[in-house]
Image (cartoon, rainbow over all chains, first blue to last red; front, side, top):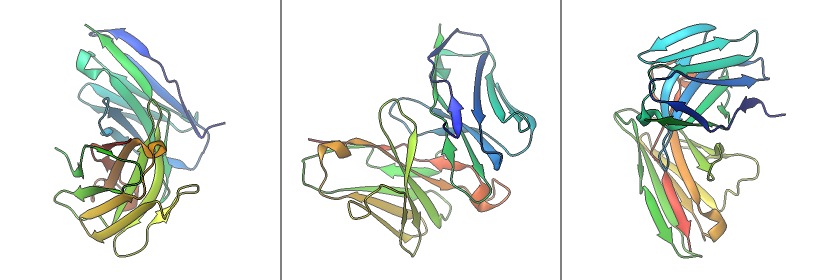
Length: 110
Length: 121
């Protein structure tokens, strides 16, 4: 079993819909959680970073962490075709290396 | 804007030759940088941790003599793929911690360069 599980998709939604992404993990030592967006042939771009349970909002993005369930989510409101990309969750324990999920491909159709 | 710059963005080389990829931190000092490799439709795989002024730390299964890492200054790390073969064709991405964006530097989020697509013919 992988330490971080993420549905590969593709997840197809109409423009304007809410995109809901999630990852589950097994390592209870993970404390820091990140979401990255990666366009084809580009490096990952940091979207959200959090280290506590609960919600964190930044513009159209909301990151949610539930440490008791070992579950994190990313919500994208009012999705746009430009949001079409692969979204990677990543997490780490204190002082340790980053562990990535496999990525979810998202397609936002006009 | 970008905080980590990577060059070149793509390179094609012949089998048996060596290729050098540069990774620079922009406007900040990075004592540690990370090199990742990514195959099509797969996630990132950590290859090595580059430490300024000391030897790099390689992940299990990564050949240190094939993937030479030099972190000669606080803003530059290089990855040299020596005697490249077609199976080395991949997307190589470097990253660094941006200071002051986390509880401590090492627990800060990683910022990535835009990657280098290497094709070995």
